[in-house]
Length: 309
Length: 227
Ligand code: SF4
Image 1: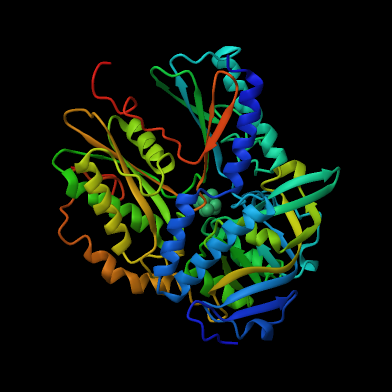
Image 2: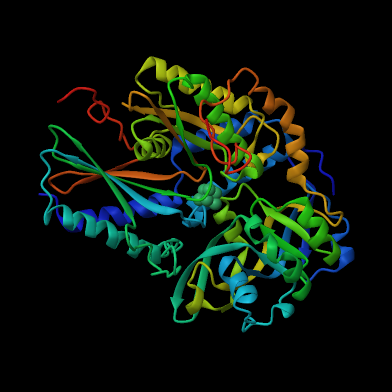
């Protein structure tokens, strides 16, 4: 049985690693962009971004002081047994959020939207957000945490079949125009695009695509994979570097996820995950052993299934 | 001071407070490091001063004339003693409406933040007050900027505004780099680079059809239809 204390300990450590240590895939991509960038301002900034990753890891401090909004993605094996059940698991995640807000520290970003009351622990109504998915025939629990900035880089639009891929490309360009100028999205960023489903589903998928797939990962559907590469190329050739300076280094990668949509619609969500890619995953086994990793492996064939089973 | 290395910018290391002649040589695109005291301010501070009409319990005029739109991560090591491991700027455009009075009343020379404001604000508020705008770099540079923070000298309105919005007075050394976004001439670096980028960027739209359905903002007024 997976114990509540194992979840609490693992979730605390997960937040520490996420806030401080940049995942290797993102680091290497920024390094590559930095080597290739020829614009003086963009190149200076990319060099400093790499220096900042190194400083965070060496000094054991948060890589970005806007530690975003901690958000958990929990994948539960169908055969997993959790001591105290799901209520205990949720409590452990809320406790770990409050504890690490003080210990790392994280910035207490979560406030009541009207009164602006801050509990100083990143916990409140519907905070932190926890999302769930399930996996057949396994008995472990995977917990991924992301700390994502929340103000710029996201957009939603209802497109129609008549808009098609050209419409998607136009909306993609619009979102670059909105958020790459002045570097409001803190690019280089991973851009997640969610297509189909409902309003809320495409936005959710866009965020998961941006935050829960590593740089270089391609969608298993070859047509979608091709479109990912095409959009990444558009993003690169758009002429932006970090901070909206001239360059070709605004995009770490583009990830697209799709959901079956209303027959008359093609809703699209777009989310950018900034270069401070705070993401870490832990797997907890029934014997309470744990394994940390950087690839969330959230999009399993089961999660993307099209059939009844 | 100009470096041969293409990757380098002209770098200036300045001690606060600075005079008009200290900042005269700064040009857009230069990098600046600061020493002395820098205080934080964002929604909470401007709201207290300009909407609630309260004066901060710390006299801002005595602090050296440099402020950053930011909130730090803060650890209280013992009661009343704080450690600030990292700090990140927040987008300044939201505070533009306070600038004219804020810069003048508190004799601010350096407004540091994320992403700058418009050149109109620079021309009407910054230039007349001899203030320049410094933008933080890349923006998610918490750890590097944290290395420049020696300690917390004081904090105001911590209970009223919370840790993220309180006014923190930080003692800094080699705090930077920041890029000069608006110099004493009132020009905006970001607006200059936008002009350079637009030709190439707008060409990407050329073969793409208009959207089937428009949105508010794309129609001229609320009287029109979105179809
Ligand atoms: S967008 Fe990311 S890097 Fe930028 S300030 Fe927010 S959390 Fe930090």
